[in-house]
Length: 517
Image 1 (cartoon, one colour):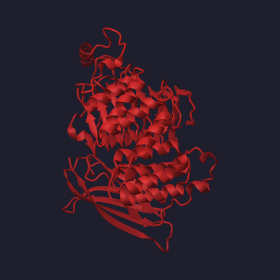
Image 2 (tube, rainbow, N blue to C red):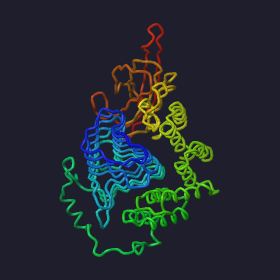
Image 3 (cartoon, rainbow, N blue to C red):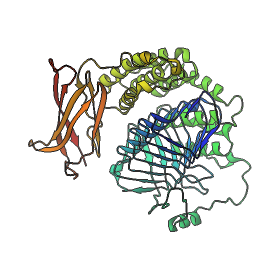
Image 4 (tube, rainbow, N blue to C red):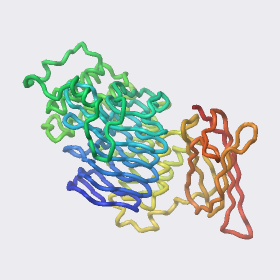
C-alpha cells in the first residue's frame, strides 16, 4: 500500500505481507487501523516527511506489525499517532530520525502499545526527536505502553528529549536505556507489572486502578485562559512540556510564543532543539491559523538561519528550511556541512542529502556516493546504518518518480567494485552489534568469532551470497546459545568468489569488537 503527496484515506482490517514495505507513506496523512502487517523484507510501515503536511497526524492504531528485517515503523521527519499496536521481531520496533516525534498515546487516550523482542532496540530516536510515550499528569496523558525484551528499550541520540513516563519496562535496568549527545530519557513512574495481557485488551490492572485514583481524568472546573497557569520562572523543560500540552488543547499561538521565547533566550541549550520541534508541531496542526502555520514557521526558520553567529541551532534551522525550498535542498545541506565542522550537523547534512537523492530524485547512484562518504566519515553512526539499509533495498525504491524508472536506472552503479568489511556498530556494544560487508561477486562466506585466547566463540555456517551489500548481527551468544562475558572479541571474515572457476578471488579480514555488559 502506498500513499503519496497529501492523500488521505484509510487501510483497515487488512493483511499486508511479503513485500519490501508493507505500507509506504510519502508526505501523506492516511489512517492504518486493525491490520496485520507481517513478513515485509525491509519495513512494516515507512513514513517520509509527513511533518511537512498541514493537518492532523497519521494514525497507526490497533495493528500487529511483525517480522521485518529492519523496522516495524520507520519515521523520517514524521510524527504519527501510534496506539494499541503490537510490534515485534524486527531490528528496531520504532525508529525515528530528524524531527520525528510520535505520540504513543495522547491527551485523550492511553498508548497500550506492546513492543517487544526487537533485536537491536525497541525504540530508537536520532537527532531532535522528542516522542511522547506518556506523561504523569492530572489527566489521561498517554503512557501505559508495554516495552520488553533483551534489546535496548530506548536509544536516544543527539538532542532528543524522550518523555516516557508511566510505562511498563522489563527488564527495568539502566543498560536498556541509552541517551547520549545531549539526549534525555525521562522514564519516571514506571508501572510495576504488565498493563495488559493480550493484543488489544487495554483492561484495567490493579496498578492502573491505583494510578487512576491518584490522577483523575476529570478537571474540577473548565479552564478559560490556559496561560493563567503559565509561570515565567519555570525551568525550560517545564515551559516546553506546558507548550506541548497547549497544542493538545488548541492553544497553538501561546505554545509558539513560549517556544520562541525559549529559543531566543537559550540558543545554546539542547532543549532549544526540543522547542524548535514543538514549534514545528504547532505550526502544522490542522487548527493552525495564518501567521502560525507552516508558512510562518518557514519564515521563522529563515530568520534563525540568517543570524550571524555559528550556533548549531541556527545551522539545524537552515537544514530544516531546505524542506520548504527544494530547489536549494542539496546546496543548503552542502553549505551546512562545510560551515559546521566537527558537529553533528555534518552527519545530519549528509543524511538529508542521501534521503533527498534517494526519495525525491530517485538518483540511486548519487545516493550511493553519499552513503560511501558517510561510511568513510561516520562508520559507526546510526545514520550510516540507516543509509546502508536503504541501499540494500535500493532496487525497490518508492520515490515519487520511481514508478516510471526503468530497472536499469534503479540499480545502475550500486554493485561494489571490491570486497570490504566495515567495523562493527555500535562498538562497544550491548546486547548486539552489526557488521556490514560488500561483495563484488557471488561468493561463499564464512565468519568465525574468537575470544582473546583464540577459542572459537561463534561460527556462522558457510553461506553463498550474491554480489551487493550485506550484514550480519552478533547477539553476544556463543554457539551453545549462552551469553559470553564482557571483553574484546575478534571476528574473522572469509569470502571466496564463486563466479570464476579458473580465477577465484579470496578476501579475508579480522576486526575487533568490544562487548560491555
